[in-house]
Length: 193
Image 1 (cartoon, rainbow, N blue to C red):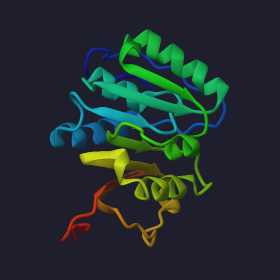
Image 2 (image 1 turned 30 degrees about the vertical axis):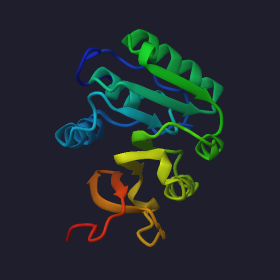
Image 3 (image 1 turned 90 degrees about the vertical axis):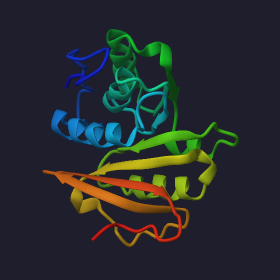
Image 4 (image 1 turned 60 degrees about the vertical axis):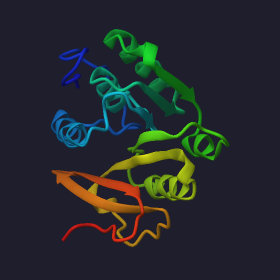
């Protein structure tokens, strides 16, 4: 794993040993950032990397000019790796690492809104649905133009997930990774055919 672009371009990132995290491949990271950069949701924005892991996604955002990234991670081992990755990429001054449960964090009152929330939890535990439902119940977590990106294995997808305030507006698949993009629901919002 490495940082693909920006101030930390080319710097290697450490991995968390074992299978407790879901590392993003460079191919998928390149694709997601190509989409997000074209939408203007990277430079100067505030991100929440909900299941921080190694920090690869949030660090990429910081390297490309995000104003701030909050990483939430409960694994002590992952937090150590995340701290090392933030330090060696030189972006730790714009990051905040929260040690704790992602769902407890989402329930905190009066959180400042985020421009982007990235959700990539451990696989096959229905955690992404639980996180998305919690975000859906808290429209105040997103800025007016904010969005949520979910990274899962395609077999985990649940197109029937009942959301009130969010709508899936796009999805992309890269091998065994599916990216799903959600935005605040507006009249006429729907996934294109």
